[in-house]
Image 1 (spheres, one colour):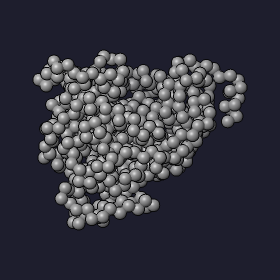
Image 2: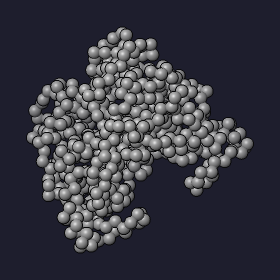
Image 3: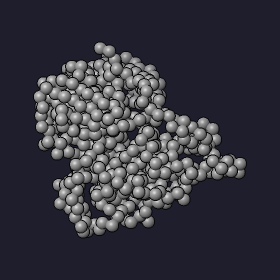
Image 4: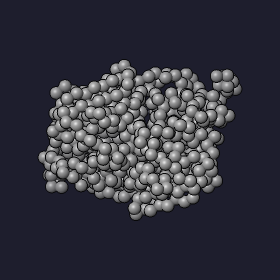
Length: 293
Length: 293
């Protein structure tokens, strides 16, 4: 599988803007671009998203997929993107009427004004996540380091969220967007279009572990969700309900897990609070204790 | 004016959740609560927000105000909050039909799925921000420090955004919410209900300086917007269009300003990159140069 990584030097994603610094000295800083893109499903206008604008096809398909407007068995016949008009049209072989879904909307957390259409929870309760999946703490440390050192818009311009689809300690697809839900949707769309399953994957996000983030991970059938940020209570509650492994505040070697502990294999020992990079193999006793947990 | 500061020990805002840490050891962590609250304007259901749930009256009024669904001359006759049902009803002396506004919605950035109803920009172009307002860099350093050391849910639980209405170096109203737009709306509502004007104030947010954040600051007629986070291009563009002073990446003594430089008075000297707290009075030459800018 070809890895998809951010392309911070791609044209059109940042603009260089002149300003002043704290001493009144002139500075030029790269700033991420946001633009409106309107998603259509066949002839129906669904929503206008403010987005970075890369991977429009994946974002549109992922959004529709995560809202259950496109199902597993739906056949996408075409995706037309008009950059000038800011329009993405996803065409399926059979049309559906989404009037009901469009009317029921909920503002979501993490972003005060997020909108979740009514059917987002529809599949949530039906999905059984893979109980055989495992995340080794040593792999998690390597994965976090790989993500944090990958050249990205986050490192070059900031003010952006990143989401990563990973397997073991390997990032496979790393998408960024001004809105973290756009970044999630881009990965969901990429998975749908490339027929990649989530059951043996890890999902990493820079954003908080809110209810919406948990719902989307479950929709993607990914059993392990990791964030460098914190939790909200309903995010934890939904994760426990779905049996999702929820790991937050993952920085360096540290993390807090609040759901799905069985999938976590503690094979890296944490040596004190020194903040150094030493990772020790666990003693046999420690392994035994962890296995008995 | 009585200052409004966060109350991290108030009941119902956090839950203590048991989990494990990176070594597999049990931990108990405080986690912020999010709950759905549905805002009604008279008999019209407007939106359901996932929110922390404190200051529901301010949040509802601020949301309606920032969407231009309530005008300056509207008289609010009652605000009924039903915590059990999760309902906030704002009643005005004259009813209006908002069907058109409810139909035109735009997903916003910062949060992929934010919703801005169509008329949010309606007042934007009519507002002239106060050109006499000033922000002294020495006051900004003190203000940032005051905010960052105020006891808050951010310090105790994390995963939350804060917004502060300030005057000079004094925080006046400090609201938090899982969604940063809820936090802004709470302050807008508080200002409307307490008849507090924005023209001589500073608005501080922990969130990014996106188009929506700029639009809301301008709606509140606040001439100076400060964030510890970064910028998006359309946020900068709108700030320049409105003549808003936009200061981002404000950490310690450092910041980057990308719009409205005339309101910034550089009266604090930055002594190298040492990160210490020394703030020197500017030399007369430096002051002269800054004034001539």
